[in-house]
Amino acid sequence: MKLYYDPISTTSRAVTFFLADQKIKIDDEVVSLFAEAHKTAEFKALNPNGQLPVLVDGDFVLTESSAILKYLADQAGSPAYPHEAQARARINEAMDWFNTGFHMSYCVFLAYRYLLPELASLNAVTLNEIETLGQAKTQKYMDVLDSHIIGDRAFVCGDEISLADYLGATHVTLGEVRNFDLSSWPNVARWIASLKARPAWNAAYAGFNGMLSAARAA
Ligand SMILES: N[C@@H](CCC(=O)N[C@@H](CS)C(=O)NCC(=O)O)C(=O)O
Image 1 (spheres, rainbow, N blue to C red):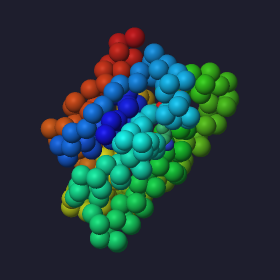
Image 2: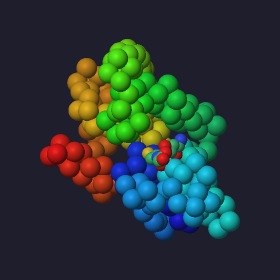
Image 3: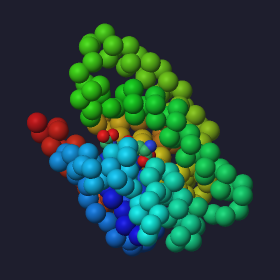
Image 4: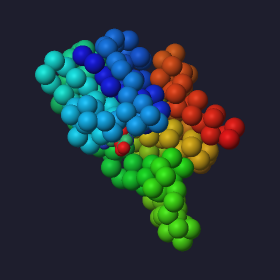
């Protein structure tokens, strides 16, 4: 199996952190977003969306970080995606939650303007409206994450790490592009701190952290 990814890509980091943390070894290849390697005809033959990550397993090509995580976990028999129906459904629920309303409100409305030129170049009035909407919706979703989804538990779906943590962590830490302050949500802050303390974190997040440092220095 081979993973095509870029260390600076949010959706790639969910997969690379999972692989490193679960000590699962597969082949990989960097497809540089900065070098626009994801726009080549060769890469678009793999993923016509021109997006990362992509997993290739023989003739089987899989896109979408959430689907890739589930496939890899099943192939490896990882405890991060248990087979028991309700445990698995709870993880699927949390992954869909991160990938839909939370992603739109927090990543798209609040963070992407610091990363994507097509958002950064919107006029000031539009940007302010998006910011106001994003702040209100993010408040709601962070409240739910803090009090209901994580609460006093160690991880998103209980006391054991699951695919929902690997996916959720990359979305939540994307707010670091604008120094988003998590201190109003202590359970979220505690959860992220515990993930950052895992030995696999630094390698998986090195590309992202390097990009942040470069941006701050500039
Ligand atoms: N829903 C997809 C989104 C993938 C995605 O947006 N990847 C970004 C990197 S984080 C990308 O490749 N962007 C390049 C582009 O859209 O041109 C997933 O979860 O895998």
